[in-house]
Length: 199
Image (cartoon, rainbow, N blue to C red):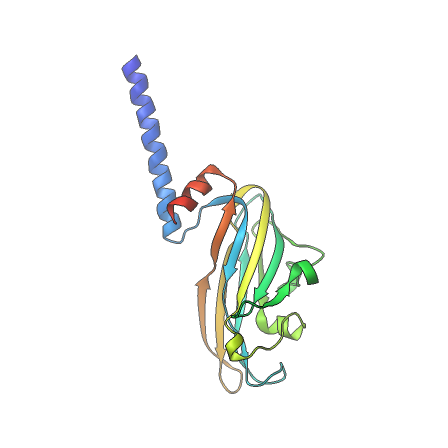
């Protein structure tokens, strides 16, 4: 009986570590299954105009996409900050409130990304709305930083940036997508183990 129980316990441990190994492998491959109750997401990007204001031709822009992959949990956007390449702050929602995303998916009145919801910010629209200003080349690229929280450990806030370039007639000629990165997260034993293993 004792041998049977020991074998059963060993089998259970082997199964758990195989599961954990699979989670770690998925995280390394970009299939981010990390659970956390909060964290900080960092995105990059740049936006350029021919002149010194938004009335000049747009040469490039960046879209920042924020996704909540959870089926039954909301994610609260606690703070959005945007920094120039020299570290100077361009925007801070703690000072100016959360800016409105496309289709009002996020904003000052509703900073919560509901389950399965996606919100998008476009640099050129933020310039037009007066949230950002036109930058010189040596002030770019920028950092788009999102601090978020949840009521329980959830699939982390997902982020991506889409870089678009335009020709002389402002017709799009190329588009590239890049993943954003987490620099910190909190909550959940599995999430903590994965965070430590990826360092």
